[in-house]
Image (cartoon, rainbow, N blue to C red; front, side):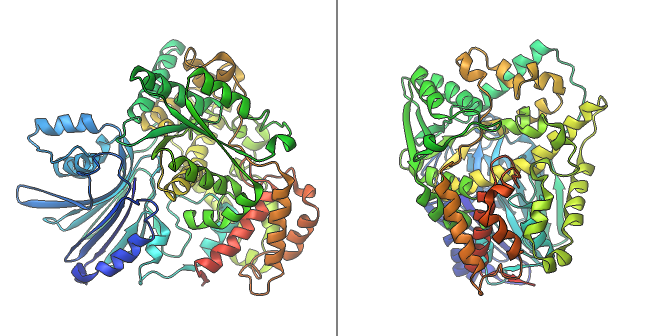
Length: 613
């Protein structure tokens, strides 16, 4: 994977803009520590920071290729999983390759098929291509939004980059936030509304979207979207297709010229990936490396609940032993988690999921010491129905995003003045209504079935991007590429139309996925009750973040001074149990994580020098 930047300006000669492009690329070096490059030409400039995974020598960027006297240049972040299929097709059309990188395959695909080339891609990607003949810039992002892409549009120019920090390194882009940005931070975060970059005038290219800029202007359009149609396969055929798609997606993503491993939690999703990868490695007389994360003394404080019924460690050990993997278990202590909260903000460019972020950042650093590529189980819950809101009527009927149903907590956190300014309830209601209007209706929808269509769409398009953003930022900040096989768009397309009673086989979360994987995993792991990403249960985390937040609230120079309701926050800081049963985001982010988020928010305003306008 890599970091990309670009600048198109019809009114400036950018051949001398190298220092600006360099400054933007500097911010992305963690994403691509192996090489860097820039390309400057009249009104367009590209920069690139590379993490070399395939074709170490031949995949250098920005890359230019010429055909029929026309030149095309690409800056690309991602990985194509159907590279060889496309290469064979292009060879038949007379193309000649100078290397074996997917970058070259992608660029030649664009030369051959133009904007329609995105329909042929299976992978995770964000890229920009300059067509010198037509004087046009083409941007595209993968269907699920695994790879990030932000841009800053003006009437005669457009600046783009993998991350917000790279855009803010450009002298024309100020770090400002307006009412909409504040509403995103307090009422939507750590999620973001699709397309919203929080910083004023910074946009996100939405997943599955393309952007074309020429002298005629800018056009943005979706090239893929969920399509609802009748599911005509019987149960046996459905199981066979799910099994094939999952195994094929994982197998395709094992291709790498550098060491690769899997992230193993002992849960269903990571165990499926590990089992398939380990079996393939065994056929090649190789041993798969696996990695797990836990926390010092967590076993002392763990208490089973509906969300986390049992600890992961015994299941991880069983998986590693059963599939003979080379397992690496990492443990982090509470002070490390708290210290890394600031680093997590720098990686994400925004306050995020507290120690759920910082622990992944620490974990990624350790994994990177052993391998460069990892496979992880994200998105199976979103696709196959694993979250509590697929199974609880109170969350389904919340009338808002089910992972953020405790709006009252969020409202009380905001100062009365800011609340009047951003109109928080109407803001959330408007964003929720926007999402509902997008849902592709199903002819078969009626009654309860329609509930799962709604919940499924909201989860795929509003919750899943938060976890994908977290995974990309925390891993790439350490130069680790992590792939997410369950995000293969073929899986998403097929499973979207499977009726809920099949997905929920035997009334179990992800029941269909379990059924499809029979014979691949040991039975007890296959049917183990869902357990989410591990978090620390050590009470020192609560006391540590509480202390940090109270120090922020006592600081008269704090940017939070006029933004939050100090009285309310102080009250729950003195009695955290009063808010204990109201997770304010998802199933992991409880009161200690609220304290950590607010501490991160203060740090973000200061470090990024964000000005409220």
